[in-house]
Image (tube, rainbow, N blue to C red; front, side):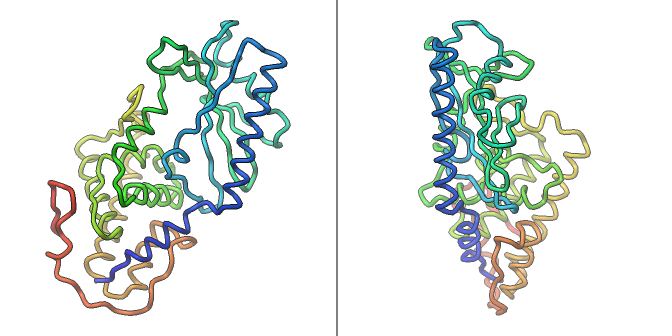
Amino acid sequence: MANTHNLFQEFNSNLQINSSKRERLIKSRDNLRSKIRKFFTENHSKYHPKFFMQGSYKMGTMIRTKDDTCDIDDGVYFDSNPDEVNCTTLQTWIKNAVYGTTESISHRSKCITVDYKADYNIDLPVYLFKKDDIHPYLAIKNGDWREDDPKEMVSAFNNEKDEKGQLIRIVRYLKAWSDFKGQKMPCGLAMTILAMNNIQTNDRDDIALKFTLIEIERTLKKEFKCLVPATPNDDLFDEYDNIRKNDFLSNLTDFISDAKNAVNDEKNKLKASNLWQKHLGYKYFPDGEDKDEEKVAARTIAPVVGTSKPYHD
């Protein structure tokens, strides 16, 4: 049985955003914030935008995609709506504020997206959070305000994190899988929640990932849902049709099969790494050494640390 834990550590490192891109991203974020503040000061002085970084950047689960891009969410918050404008108008004001920053700025349903082509995207969701409200309200294009609390999601994730950071790494591996496979795979938030709900910790990441995938499959076959542990507690799989659902479950089954082979059966580290690369990609997951390892008795890896559901293959 080949131990590929070190390969996963290298994979996790390869998924990190490099320092120069991170600096550009933060500089771009700050530039957008300055433009938005200036726009409202000059055009709608009764509005005072505040900002909150949320999503994967805040949780530490952001990854480089296979195209070497990434994205961040920078929420734009208002504590009042003096002119009582609708959602679309307030979003449009944000779009006008950042107009000309890049050649590609999109007005999407839940945010304004500034696309720094071939580098990164910055999403600007707009919220109304009055002082007496328990939760903020998200602006929906051509729709109404919807209660939505991204800070709750960050808090829920932080409450589940382990000291060794394995949950963060497992989330990153699942997101890399989704990015590599495409085919309308679940979004990054869904992968984060699936990992939170089904994590099976172990001293080795390859074993932890294998058992986590098994537990995800078990729970989804029982009930195909992915509830956000934050207001409004929506089901991210609610709009999946049977084709998309079955495609995801099929990809999951295939991944589990190769994960079992890599962890339980394959002695050669290069061949084991090739099994992982089928699902995690060849760009960032490294090749193992073309060398055999002695098979370890199954009983030494079957128990899963921190779970009441030990698995046996």
